[in-house]
Image (cartoon, rainbow, N blue to C red; front, side):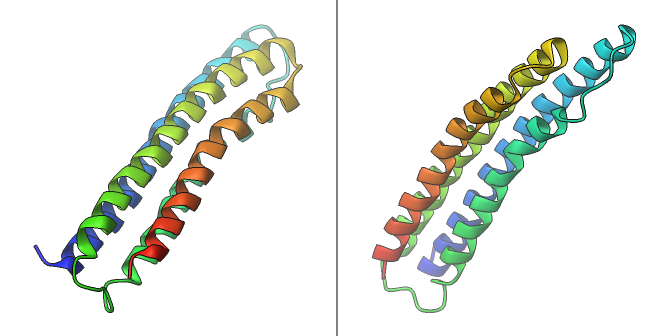
Length: 152
């Protein structure tokens, strides 16, 4: 496999893994939001619209994967010999870290949906917890960018 093909494969892996994590994360949080709203309707309580912020939180990890993908694809035309393997490895492992961050952010978002709908309290605390999980994805993207910039 040529270096250019491995770079493209790394870019696709990064986007695919981060996007898959976002799909899982938003799916978990969305299912919890729907269940929480159902409980509110059944109890004649107002259904909090704020739950959508928990549902949407994991989607940003796809954007981080897109950023890395574009950086990697920018190396295709002028890649030094041997650049393919490091780009492929960076794409797979950065995408995995970003995707897992999204998955677990969705799991935390699901718990936040349940707690917010039941108590109508703690919104800022729940968002802070989701932000900490998001930080893992930001670190993975930032450090992968540093590594990719070192690849000539």
